[in-house]
Length: 274
Image (cartoon, rainbow, N blue to C red):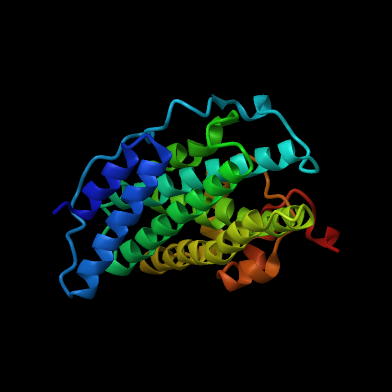
């Protein structure tokens, strides 16, 4: 039986999206079955790749070179879903990468439970969105995609607190801000499968942001650091650009993110809120 770190590297070194996500879900089931039986698998150690394996398609481009499409057309909605699929596939790898990447930091088993569960859910999200694309006559890989998605992982390759600050607490929190608008786009288009998929993603992403916040606060407490000050320092160090309002304050609060964490990093003054 593989250790959890070996399972993570197995996912990270698998290129095909459907195969990668199947491994993600199978390894998660094995981890939780062992936990339920009272015999947790060893976390172990394994060396993750700097970049995860990726399929030959989609072509990865600089963000400025990815065509912008308006979601009012079927082609625009396909492009939007394709972008979501790409985000979800990167999220699968991000949540597995955090496990072997930082085994030098002693963490409770609950830390690993949370990221394995997140990786399993991200795998489900990728497949839901891929199913929607295929229902609309397309597929993941049919369009170019954003090459910068893995940058946050590379920037925080040796900083666990930086990884938690930037990936779940900034990037995934951004998903809470924008997903309601996407759901409305597909609801207006009567694309029921896409609405259902996005509603599933929206509901479960709150938990992923919450896991990031929980373990970030845990590490701050371990080192007697002020979480808000450390968060601001790390986001300014690793995140390229200001945070963009409007913020979904209700869902962010549900995930454990207080407004004084993110508003000071926003690109408009707090007084500009409506």
